[in-house]
Amino acid sequence: MSIVPFDVERCDITSLLRMLGKIPGQRRRRGKIYSLSFVLAVVLVATLTGAKCLRELHRRAAALPQPLLARLGAPRDRFRGSCRAPSGKTVRMLLKKIDVDALDAAFGAWLCAQTARGHVALAIDGKVLRGAWSDEDTQVRLLSAMLHGEGVVIAQVRVPDDTNEITQVEELVGKLPDIPGRPAVTLDAVHAQHDTAELLVKAGMDYIMTIKRNQPTLERKIFELILLLLQEAPHHEVGERGHGRIKNWRTWATAADGIDCPHAATAGVIRRDEFDLTGRRISREHALILTSTSDENATAAYLHAHARGHWGIENEIHYTRDTAWREAANPTYTGNTNHALASFRNLAIGVIRLNGTRKTKETLENVAADRYGALPLLTTVCSRSTR
Image 1 (tube, rainbow, N blue to C red):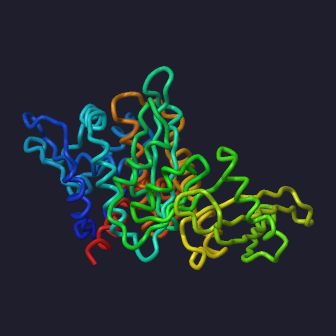
Image 2: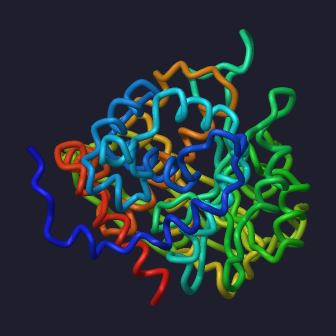
Image 3: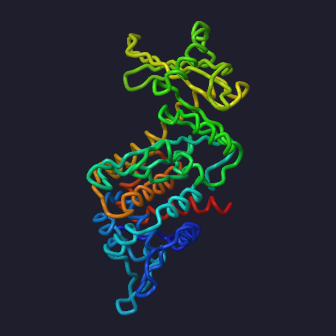
């Protein structure tokens, strides 16, 4: 049985509730019992307990203790003398009809305001919700932007069924919150497009693209440019040892002279060698990199750090949502529900990361065991935003 912490009443979550309250609702005023901020806060806390689907969200919400419901803004039942939790139908209908664009914008701006400091790098990548289908032939796809290092999503859009991720970069960039300085944007080879490069630079950002065979002419030109560099000592080198493997990264960088890509300034190559513990090579890979960052600033160390940081969106966001909430196995079909659930998982991950831990699944288990454990997570984040 959970014991009420002595400082529950001192947990200031007004910043969170204020942010949630600004999200437009789709509910009728007549007969409305709960405030929007309360219902959304309950969904967030239930998500922080590891609830994987609508049924679990309802069960976890119904099991929230009275003091916690009161802190989230629950209305009081005058006849029973207790706080009321939203019904499963209320939660289901809200997530089905909620404005997911407004939801993502509010979550992203709130997280960004507490994390974006100094030089900011963003990773842009898409994810298919494999268990969610918009019709019998089309799966739901989301395109997101994540802050390197912090591991928090600050923007997300749904990819329309009749197009692909490439066409939605402009939409995503247009929904980014205000970011200080000149951000660097990392993209995988799918997004190595001339239009995307032009778009990002015009938006006041630098791009860092991985170039592969989907752009054969560009790939060949860059390879010819950096081929002689591979005969030199690497401009940057780093190694790691773990999980029975030794990994070594060597990076070279040079000015992107003669490369036909908008605003291309620096080209580079990263060679990744993997060995077993006896020193026998297991694999060797080369990654070609092109960036609009000038060769004075885009050092080999810069290219290496940003290229590796890009995969944080796969490892720290997509993989985490699949393992902690089993997102890929969740067959949710109704309205905006699948998108909204992904948004709440992004916010939950962000709250956990901002509290200094990467142990998402362990944190969810701790909150599931003691629901009051959600309040310190939210309070810590909220207090930062008011400093």
